[in-house]
Image (spheres, rainbow, N blue to C red):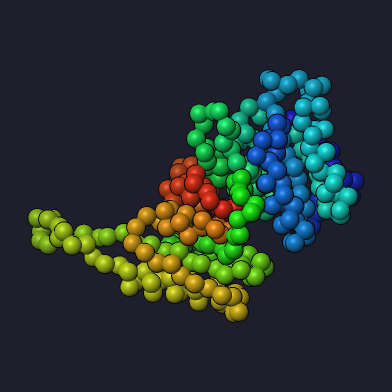
Length: 289
């Protein structure tokens, strides 16, 4: 069951893309996500929907107005006053990682803030990891960042998969829109070479630096096909992809990764690279589906 407060019914099926923002009823960690989503809506013409998830066992229907709907309205009204199309929704659900994606089935992007609450034992990235595995749309995770820190550039990790191409396209479009440099990160791991039929291995691994650099250049060409004037750089190194992407994102304006699988087991097994980047996000991070 869902309660919603919206704009007039003739705007109930907007043609504009929709951005859904997850807002905690207590407001914790939601401000950066809402600020980022509103800025994106202004720039792209998207509509906003602010959603809070309330456990029906914890709050009777008559108490939800004060607990969730009124706070959502207080956040939505100033955005409406400046001309943005904003709706609010309170979704019933004991599990946020299921209820929030259900509320975003028609969205182009689901945006959430930090999911770590000081004083609790829940690890950082717990909610974002589960949301990405269940959502049908791309998910943006907006951590609490030092507003005084200068941030520039868009970072994207690529590995040649289909979803990697979609992540690259999203990152290139964002870099062009924001007039930022795009940095393409690609990594390789040593491959031990078998010496004989007994399957013993050469302790000297096969070096994949050159072919990985060549692969990264194809990604550069792909990005420039979309945006010929885009400033694109590469970062190729031996080692763990998640570490390389996180290191490259320390002062980035935006980080983009792909997430594999849309159904069944593949959907639940979020790639280890995406998981690690989300859990250690040092910038606004979008997991592209």
